[in-house]
Image 1 (cartoon, rainbow, N blue to C red):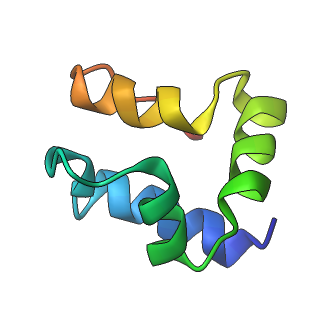
Image 2: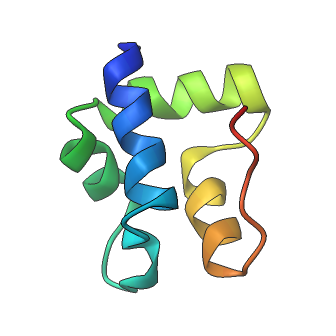
Length: 68
């Protein structure tokens, strides 16, 4: 996983709040960040113990993940 893709993914969630658009999926957010959804999902599961879909769901529920 390229660091710049991960940073862009986080920025899309934290700064641009794309998760507020109910039609936007985890895969689409990954593509916006220039990342492969499968790679991003694996990276999130390995580093945070949560799937990409769950990250988006948690943000939508007002329970964002701490990426630091």
